[in-house]
Length: 201
Image 1 (spheres, rainbow, N blue to C red):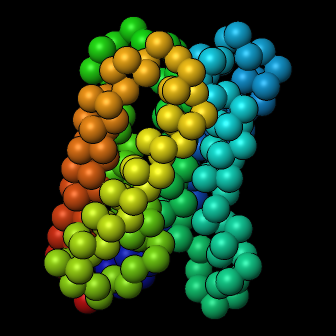
Image 2 (cartoon, one colour; image 1 turned 180 degrees about the horizontal axis):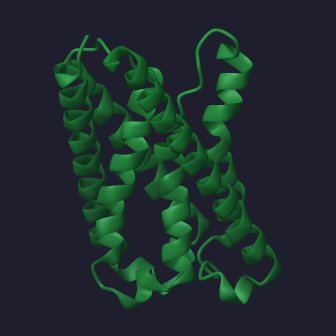
């Protein structure tokens, strides 16, 4: 009986994750569309809104596009990774829509830690083998997470920080963001590595 119900349970979980990933994308694109139609209500006006309207959908669709082009028919689609990669873009938009980045002093710091952890975990789940050693998983997490954090901060500076009042505190803020993003990536590497090591073969 156990042998019959176990695959159903796993399949049910995967379906739930797939539904969650699709729902996250639908909500993300709905928020992007509303930001395009009603920019004053989006929370991203004056915060490189044009760049966000381009980068966010590309970020959320990068994995499906890559999988369709390179691995379609050879490997099943990694819905968990897709959800983990989509959530950072969605959560950032929701946070801006609710004005949390400006109203809650610690929100930005928390987001750099949490969202970089989610994004890095998604990349690890999608592009590294389950048999990857824990130490190597952590190093790959740091390599990706730190690089992505640097790219993000450079993009923020070019897109709007250099022309905004935030320029006065940009150096300190950028260093803090890089540290928090790196720590989030580190935690993702440790968690993914540990969960894989603990999973049954």
